[in-house]
Amino acid sequence: MDDGRAEGPMKLGMRQLDAFQAVMTLGTVTAAANVLATSQPAVTRSIRQLEDATGLQLFRRVRGRLDPTADARELMETVRQSYAGIDRIAQVASQLRRRHTGHLRVGCLPAFAQGFIARTIADFLADHPKASLSVTPLMSSDVVRATRSREVDIGIAAYDIDVTGLDTRPFTDCPEVAVVPAGHPLAGREVVVPADLAGQPLVMLGASDPYRQRLDRLLAGEGVTPARLVETPTSSALCAMVVEGVGVGVVNPITALDFIGQGLIMLRLAADLPFVTTRLQVTTGGPNALARAFVTVMERRRDTDLAAVAGALGHPPSIS
Image (cartoon, rainbow, N blue to C red; front, side):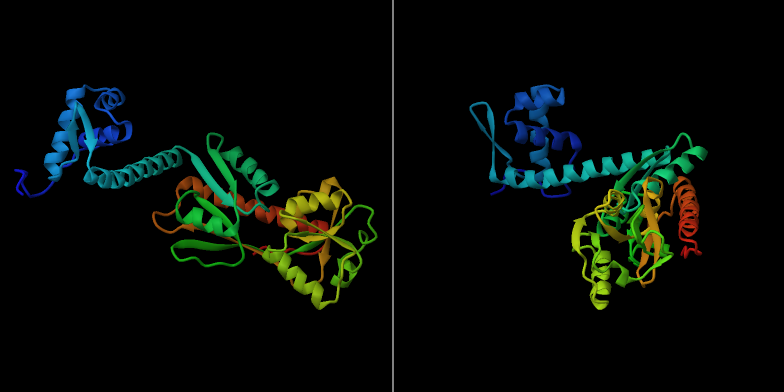
């Protein structure tokens, strides 16, 4: 049946969609008008304009009320999605404004999120005192996701990875180290071999952690059985437990460095257990000047920290 509405290009405006969304959400023209800070006739007029533009009857007029039709309910689902997209645009625009005015977002492994990043930020702010930063500790898969979706400007993920659509650069490739509490019988050693860990209480990362799994394979291959095992999800917690005498462990040297002054002894481990990480950034658009400056400071801090590790171990570091 021809209802008099012409076929052709639809001219939809935000005013009409706002009115439709408000009426559908709030249930009455009066409430919609109050929320939109306009008059009831203006809301009614916008609804009629939307019906004319779409060629659909969206509401039935029942005793002064607008009763939504099935078409209106289906259209509302699309409108909700559109509003979510608009909200996302506003969120991204806000993030871009903050980036241009000196806000930097970093996503990194928990291993870097404490001492290393704190030292890096202190170095960076010395030259960029008006910059603001946010740091989010993330698992490697989440670092990749957050970098790709531009939720962070710079990411540091574990392992040597090459991700399509991201600029990936090696960040660290250095041996993991053995850590023991001060006064431990192994503390005077220059080098620890896996067999030295036999019969020792071990503090290790969780069983699902890939670094833990590599260590498990190494110890099993050497026939090493610990006296007891304590598991923890983060390398910093591992080091803290070692300091308290809970046991000995194997960990990345960047985190171990944070605990040197607290009673942790770092020892060279004669085993092939490299700590490999990758720096990530988006490829499109290129990093802004603030991000480039932060990367420079971060790499300088990495080199300084690994030199300090080398001093603590008494042998040259492998930086990258």
